[in-house]
Image (cartoon, rainbow, N blue to C red; front, side, top):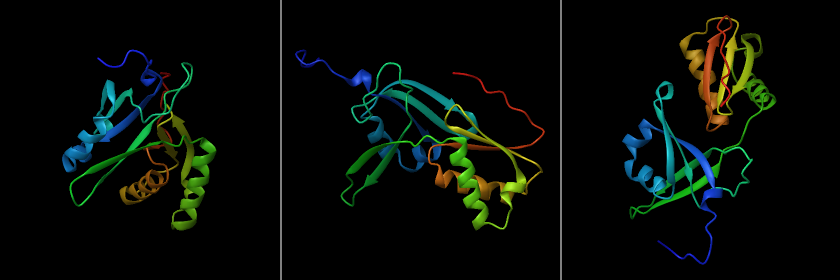
Length: 173
């Protein structure tokens, strides 16, 4: 199946990435081009976000040691006027709770909402989901505004906003 003289490092280049159903419907050629460079070995339908999370190997992913956590990637697809699709893979930034708090402070400065008075806690769950617990029920517009701001600054994370009384369980992978 190929040149056996040189051992491939492909299986040391693992990663995950998420594709929304909207992206598939609006740009199926771009999604197909991105997937063509990945040996997909796992996929998970994420009902809450209407997306599919893929796991696999690609020559465009970073070389990893066996004990390193599998990073998340973002595929940036560009279609030229001639129809040629170029895919560039970027490793997602991993956010700490301190990073998220700084982003919330920045949002507070730009919005009329006093986010620090509203947010009871901010917790990262499984490295790709931010759960905000709030002290009150927010108007849907305010909830969407905070979620959109966080998603625009923290690419690749999901944002869930819950009333403060609701508890979540962090399930270890």
